[in-house]
Length: 240
Length: 330
Image (cartoon, rainbow over all chains, first blue to last red; front, side, top):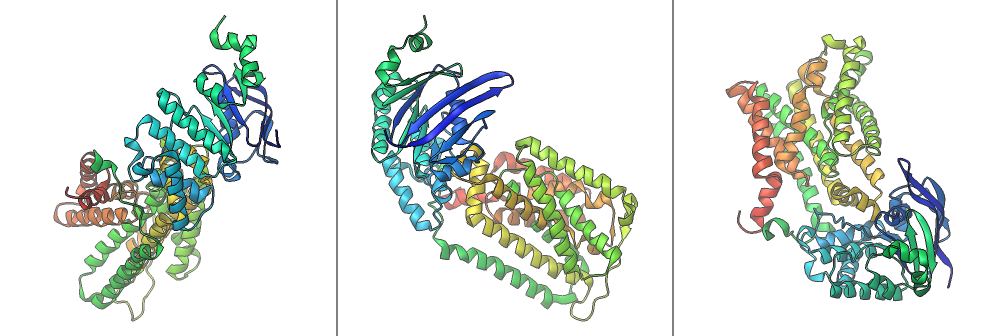
């Protein structure tokens, strides 16, 4: 693979004595499609929050595109090109769908012209299939639309790396396919994607590499078939 | 359902937006001209009433920059107002500088206090932030009450300076000054709302973490909002000692100030610059009329009743009512 774009080294995070993450090392290469899996509560979202700068790890370092971002505030990471979605969608409810998309265009990308913002917002709305919902409130969107909005808002930040945190949870098969197709298209455009997901069908279809986290430890990291054959992965996932 | 949840398309491009700004300046100029033309031909009472309403336009507008746009509810408006007030008292004790210098000093002091409040938002959100601001006001009141140089708990008399020629009375001068300040405050609120700062604050109000993820530098924006808001509140307080000529902590830190400066934006509508303006004029006028016709004690009672009515029947305030009506029938 090509150069490293995101690298976590020895990430450890404790919450009141509970070890959420222990010595996690993870290297992501430019253009890669990585699936990050693990049972509920295994620390996946904590790791994503560390990457995005929402929480600070107790120790360890994170490097993004050649810069140490361990102490960089979240908004600046977004500007650097590290975008994420939230597992539970967090739309700006006081704004329209279009205005939601415009926030990262204005802040993360740094557009100042209303026209440029409007045009690029339209491109993204088309891309995620929300063009016909542009002027309504996120309050009336369905689950799948909310997840598309999450993705759209992350895309509007023009990410180099997109961390998709359970964007398909609770969606129907065809909706999952729809989102997968979108993610695959984005990857083809050069965006590195880290997919956190429970739907194994989606993870297996999408990922070139799978990383497994169980109880805050990374227990596997490799090509999908190999990882899924590993005994401990099977145990963690399917039980004894 | 759709009436509540569909929105107008995005506001028109920049040049058209400037009309509101020009309208604010024009309205301010007309009011100043009117006050100068009328001069001292009307009863001084009207000036005193106008002063109070204008003071609340400034306070409500200032509160709204942080509380309405950014969603950080400040219960300590009276603290900022009193800091402005006592900056004037302090300077008046030492020097006899023109009021405009007192006001600048008050803006600086209260602005710095606002900046400090802004840093509070790093750790405190929601109700915790609000309680901290309330505590700040109480601490300040205790300090002032025990600082004898500025009158302590007994209060202090301020002698109005002599004025010459141009203005009929000192109240006349104060009103013209207050029109100017109110115009500046509304203009500032408008500029903040329409700029990138306003967009960022709106995102912070809706979801601060998501806003950060979208590249919104939330701390920086909150500091800008809190400083601007605090400075304007301080400026509103600076002329107050000259207006009442006797200040004590109970007046300067009055509950009415904190309550009104929250109630007025809520009744008017918190998401736009004109909401607090409308709310302050509405509630302020009603209070003035009631003070004269019924009793001054009815003041806060009426504010409370109106607040309850609006929060239950029209939670988006007058702004919300107008928007719903514009969209096609109430």
